[in-house]
Image (cartoon, rainbow, N blue to C red; front, side):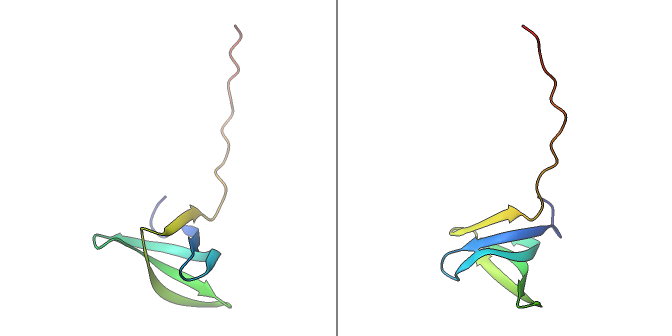
Length: 70
């Protein structure tokens, strides 16, 4: 996942269940730096890496699978 990617954020302590955001950085102190969208407004937020799940905001494009005959 690259910086500036659209993400979904899951964090129990904050009650974030798939909140929309943008990954801005991962700092050495153990936090994700994100721009969090709340009620149509954007806020800078820091989520601890321990206890937070960051998921890509868009599904991965499936590549063509090659079938092997045996």
